[in-house]
Structure formats: structure tokens, C-alpha cells
Image 1 (cartoon, rainbow, N blue to C red):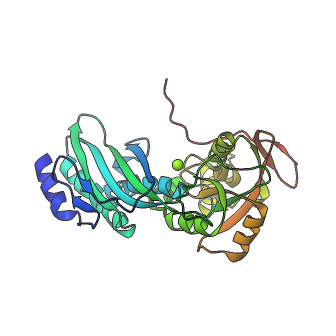
Image 2 (image 1 turned 120 degrees about the vertical axis):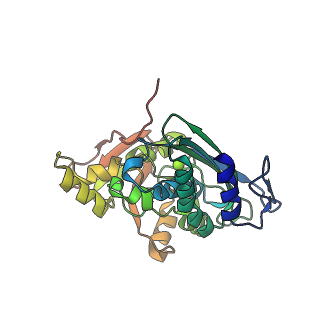
Image 3 (image 1 turned 180 degrees about the vertical axis):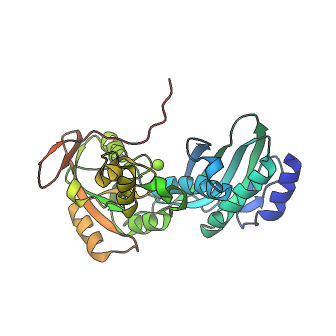
Length: 314
Ligand SMILES: [Mg+2]
């Protein structure tokens, strides 16, 4: 079965100018002479954790597996270059499943001019697990010729917290269908002096806490300004468990939007220019005192306990 799949993929995966040797040999060979700083990332998705295979078209699973990786490259404001793809397939129906996973991810790879360099496929008695490793190219930042990948650790007290898009309710479908913010991240990093950034994968509050921790500062989130998605509103209405749409926006995760730290002047310029087609919102500021706070017009400043998705293990 494995050889059948490899033969299929050798025919199906398009050639790419970077691929001197593509899938089919022991390893791939890539032309990388133009890359000064290489960005690498990997993500592992498993059935029943990141998706439920009995409820979803495997093509959407394939697309998601690649898109979450692309979102991590977006978080670094890096350009996608190449991917390797590993699948652990259930023994029953594995070949058909693998073909569909590739059918789901290849259009996205093509959209970002990503070279699919190869991968590995095993079968076992467990559920579907898939892992993709991506290579990206760090691009030059604002006012510099040097590569300047966006990092989590550069937020400064006084910086504004800027978000792309809206948050919450991704479980209703957005976590499969989202657009990784590659284009937006690259444009914003080139036009503005971004101090720090992250992609919101675990939840707005928890991902903001990652920036704060790495930067050695604090942040005050203005709850009145948080862009709550329509899905967050729909989910809060559907669940009927007392949760509010704002709570979903703060903690659901898998929004795959960007959280950026930008000086007030740059933030103002960015919000006036609106250089990308997605919503940009100022939702608060970074402060010297470490920790995370929330504020709104009714209650004033108080602690914000970051909530979101966390893989738990001993
Ligand atoms: Mg990330």
C-alpha cells in the first residue's frame, strides 16, 4: 500500500523550481541559495484532539494540518518555502484517507508556492496522526535589508496591542477553513516596525500571555475593544451554558489571527493606512508591570486569568 501511495504522490505532487530532487528518493534536495535565515516549524495533529475524523471530510483535515503550520510561519512574518509531511494512518482505509488528506492540502501548498519535498507514511493500530514540518524564509523587516523574523520577545511598555481579524467560536468551522495570515504578516512587518508578534492558536488571552512572558512586561486588555466574531456570538447562544461571546473570544483558541506589539505612533499609522484587507483593532497596551490585566468601562482594571487550549500530560 505504501508503494502505491508513493507512486500516486509522485504523479500528483507538482514539481517546484526549488526541488532539485523531490519525493521518491531517500531524501529531497532543495535549492536554497537565496535564503539567509531559514525558519523551521513543525505541528502534530491527532484524531479526537484536533479533529474528529468520523465527523469531517479528511480533505479538511489535510488542509488544516498545513494551515496551522503556515500560521506559525505567519507569526514569524516568514515566507513559506518547503514542506515534509508525515502520516500515521489507521490500517483500515488508510490509502484512501492519505489520498484525501493530500487532496486537501495540495491546493493550499500551491496557493503559497510551497514545495512539497516529501514525507513518510506509516500505518498502525492507532488513530490518524499527521505531522507537517515547514521551512520558511525570514524576510527583511521595516527599514532594514537584513532578515527580521517577527518574535514574541520584543514587546515594550507603552506598545499597543494590535489584532488582525476577530476572535472566538472557531469550533463552528473556522478552525478548518481559516486563512493563515502569511500575506498580512509579511506586509505589516515590512511597512511597520513591529516589536513582537504571535499567531493566536491557543486563545487570545493565553497567546497574549506568551508575548508578555517572553518580553518581560505586562499587558492591559480593553475588553470593550476586543473584536468578537459572529461565530463567538452564535456559539454563546447555542451552548446556553452561561458563557458569553466575549469569553469565547478570549479563550476558545484556533482563531489563527495575529497579535502584534507596535509603538503607539506606528499603531496609529497602521490603523489609518489599513494596508491589509483584514480588520485591524487596537485592544490595549503593554505595561512595565509583569502580568495580564483586563479593563472595561464598567469595572476598571483587574487581573485577567489567561484561558485557552493546553495539551495536558504528566
Ligand atoms: Mg504559533
